[in-house]
View (spheres, helix red, strand yellow):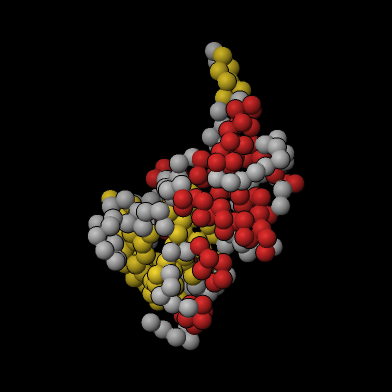
Amino acid sequence: MPGENGNETPLVLMEKIVKRFGQVTALEGVDFEVKPQEVMALLGDNGAGKSTLIKILTGVHTPSSGQIYFEGRPVQIGNPQEARALGIETVYQDLALVNSMSLGRNFFLGREPVHRFGPLRWLDMRTMARQTCDSLADIGIKIRSANEKVGKLSGGERQSIAIGRAVHFGVKLLILDEPTSALSVAESRKVLDYTLNAKARGLSVIFITHNVHHVMAVADRYSIIRHGQKVGTYARGEITFDDISDLITGQRLS
């Protein structure tokens, strides 16, 4: 299945996606693709439809019409578990981390290694702690202790744990939903570095944001959605900061 700009098979290809909620059309014939090992920015104002598009890709919503391809194969993603089984992981703004649990427990949440003795099973805390530290160190994330409670971490540290978890478990597509929206400048820079590290390790990344400056620092291409329709997809260096801002607001249409 060729992509928009050549013969390379996209990791994800969404063709003519339509989503209606009753009489309201949230998406109207949107095409969207992500190539292997690229950072694709998904940009749009509030209500533009970008969240709806991602929820279709991750199985939260079913499209009214259109087709999704993953690694060149047509797929139907009926729920988030099916998306995860394909290798799609989403890091939402709330991060889905449990504040009262340790960093190691959060890292393996739902995938915990266990000891077994006959019918008895119990968590292998030592393995979780060691693998959490090792895996995060592999992508440049240093932590104080895997036994520290997540509730004590800063926003940037929490983002790093969620990103590192996705890399560790062999995710193919990492979706970052407004990852820098509530972070300081220094912590935002770290998250951008972790995003590039994830790409360097072979992942594709969809970076959803309102912050054009941040996305221009990491994205290979930009797809812009406005009022449920795709305005266009542009390569890095093809358009300027002001161009992107104008396309998002509708002051200039492609």
